Image (cartoon, helix red, strand yellow):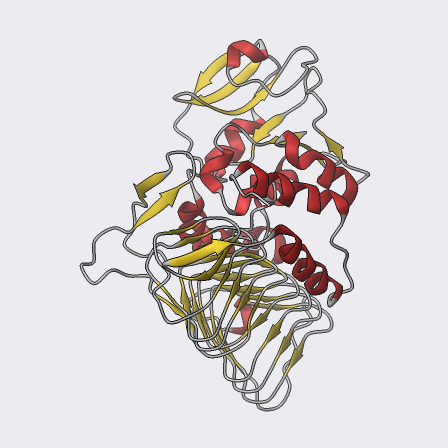
Length: 401
């Protein structure tokens, strides 16, 4: 089986500038992980943008990266929205058939080896099988499907796993049958786990400090820390090795990012290696209650998100200073370093430095120095393959030395 990214990758920037769309988190799992769990395959095999291939081969030398499909092999679009009907139709594909919705190739089984991922059934040598299955259009869709997938993943993948549910004195657990706790989780006195509104999943090594309140559906990833008095409202997914405090609602953290202090973050998507300063707040609802617009990388202009609730979309390695304010639907590009009292709004280009309204270009050498220090704190390296990706992005965006 191959999970493939199609030509709509740029609709998921800035998060997909540094990873496959399939590695975006939604629910408990990443999109790719869910598809592989449902449709099988002993190896991890994926087709991604060429510029990301070296990084994936470096990180996962055992994976098959950008290998052309073989005859009879199932290929599934990473943007496919998983439902029972989607599972039925994909599993029912015969060699020589391709599922399509309008002009979107959702899944196919070629009858012969192909040099790469096709864009149409004809290129795959397949008969088109029309369907009305949905797929994700942009990051806003992931934020708003997180509720459904948190519940779906809990029921399908965690219901029969060993549950180390055991609370310490002073911990309150409401609707405990909807709470799953992995081995090595530490819960301090005063913690409230309220699964009355949806499941709560605490993965291995999670630590919840005193008086934190989690209202499901919520997933906390491996070795993440929830700070004293934190308030986490579902649907929220916090990836591995994050530190979260203050108030968070309806948001997704990819991994390795910190929002340790007071301040509100709502209906937002946060990449990796992001640091959000103390008392930073964002808006996720307009005063007019109209749909939120957001910047689109493909159109280089604003589009309607289709929802009235949307906060910030924050790319990898973004740093936000104390007391920063982020407007509704703001898109913050990768590698940006922002501070000051001016409202951060609309679109902040990748590798921006300074105060909103008075931005400069973040020098690439300085960006790399910070990235090295940040990753070293987690005993990880900022590798040459990573640096090459960021250098290319920096150069493509017209950043001169």
